[in-house]
Length: 89
Image (cartoon, rainbow, N blue to C red; front, side, top):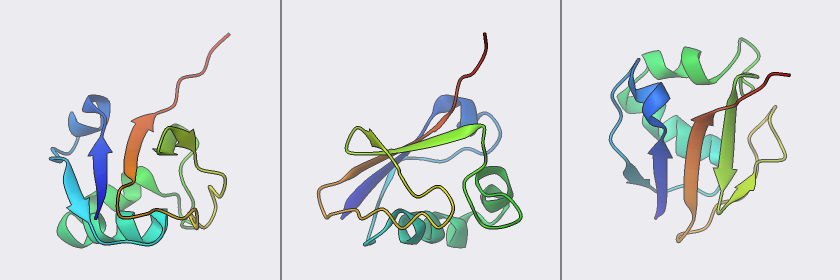
């Protein structure tokens, strides 16, 4: 099962322990968490169902490519990290 982590900055709003999820894509992994914690969906996804701009998701150390549909594949050994993206100048 893929292992899903949420950064401490996200957990300040909604406490989320890391967990194993049965999923083939990032979307499926997040859907498993949203089933347990529905209010997280609005914090992670925009009104179109894509990843919000202020967040980043990494699978096995690489940023997801599909921020709109979250169709990036995950394997049974994958590590998925959801973090707040940093920006500035």
